[in-house]
Length: 479
Image 1 (cartoon, rainbow, N blue to C red):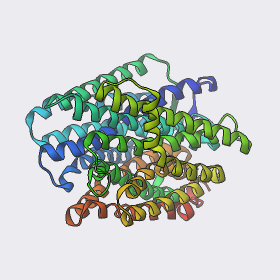
Image 2: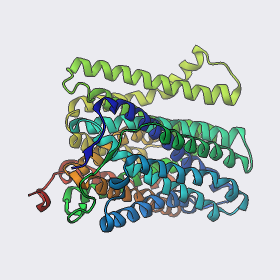
Image 3: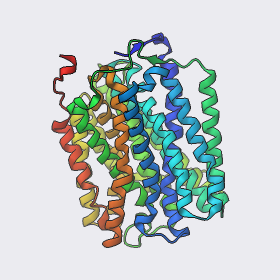
């Protein structure tokens, strides 16, 4: 078992820094959704070609994590040798270089050269995720690992909420030409380098395996991990496919009939739903008090919903009114934003009730949410207009707990194989590269609304994992 070489009193300090990092990489990742639409128009691309951005970005995750796994399987887990801090810093530097590389690649005016920048960023974020996800899981009590990861993912979703709003404003409203890409990514690169320097200077709590980095066998001997890998593949593929085309979907005359700027608000709400769900489950089941009464859970949940909606109101108002139209925020504007976002409250209520029922059962909550995602996709196909659009946006809410619940269920009882198992799960982020291509082909061959049926297969498998696939079978390694 990996050894802890830091006092427990430093846990909150470490968690705060890592949560900030989750926020940063969330914002950078969500920019892809804006650029899929931007480059599609700029280079006159098909639906499939525009999704090569996600293929390059998430393909880097798959290739980088696979390389990490093969190395660790032969020579020992490098993170167990150097520690999580070094792993995180290395990822930050590589991702920062990727962001800075947009400055020259955009000058080439070649779409396929520009894809190289997305690939480099993906490699850097791969190292960060391999280090950060298990770090959050093992930094406190095992029984609350899922709650901590949901909290961190909640701030990751805050980043993915702000990314489309601010990035979309810069790309579509404020900047033009090459600077519309160069400026945002120069800023992102500077932030990543600054954060790497900050981690270098601070005394971040670390974990290392002080016994051995050469393990008997490998993590693939755990059947629940292998099934969890497929669940991650399908989850990421579905989430990325939906987010990548939500902008264009909202702009369709038969769906939302809005302009690009307004469409970014809908995209922000999709990712904002993930933020609401992750912070909501973290407030219901945290590690400070695992024995909350129902009344305490309801109180915490209502406060979380209220505060997260205020955050959404503020940022949508700042982007759509202050930045875009040079207006002042007034009560009337907040009322109009409330009316705009009110359909989401129906789905938040359903989500909250299910969380209260299944707050102590990660697998049952996962299964129920995946079932609802299937129903929402079918609803979006049957109905057009606002019903179809809000059904797709609401999927963000029910995606919220999937990553953390699949991840923690998959690495349960891996012990010394935790980092190796984490790298295998990160490999399966390649689903975000592969499944959107199938989505794009379906959109090209039929139409975009019909393509939103494609992710149903993903949620059906996740439903299976939450009902059966998560179960741990005894392995000879620990007999």
